[in-house]
Length: 208
Ligand SMILES: C[S@@+](CC[C@H](N)C(=O)[O-])C[C@H]1O[C@@H](n2cnc3c(N)ncnc32)[C@H](O)[C@@H]1O
Image (cartoon, rainbow, N blue to C red):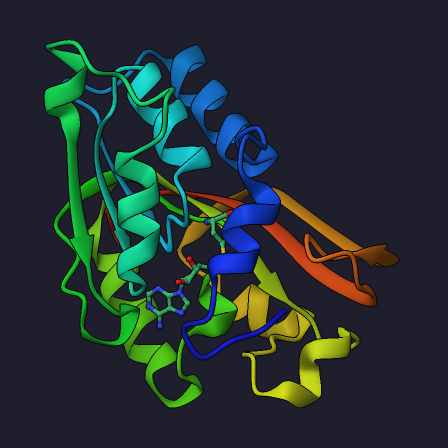
């Protein structure tokens, strides 16, 4: 996949794709427990909004952020974006980089296939801010990449299984699915994937 802000072809390739399974897993857990009052989500690296739309559809107040202005333009132009009040009023958007983002408190931080593109030196601080922003009983959902991923040499952030355990310290691991497989990218290239699919739950007492 091309990086450095050239995400247009990716957005073209994934348009109309369904929400990510990690998001659906987290949302189903919230639904089973009973939603928090006025549930608030952050959709990091939202891209063209495949996950944002699902959050809105399920009644979540959502801040969708992405460093690429085109992502937000595409999100706002989606035909399936709820247009009617009160749901339409539940969306805020922000063009910002993870590295500079001060996350507001949220019940769910969703980061589908985006955090590996953060600057490596900034990631520990970014993760600390994200963890601190998750409300008691809240969740993180998203993906990180492992050392066997073909992109490991290309500058994306790589996490070992031990790194994942360290990042998850203080959370309950509800989903940790490690996938190593040959597979396509949305741009139809074949590569070796090493993905950690994650859903983490913050303690109800917020001792993260
Ligand atoms: C692979 S796409 C994923 C988009 C969407 N979450 C999905 O699952 O289809 C990664 C997104 O992260 C955004 N991104 C990459 N680096 C970023 C950064 N440092 N800060 C904020 N967003 C970033 C890109 O603009 C892109 O929209």
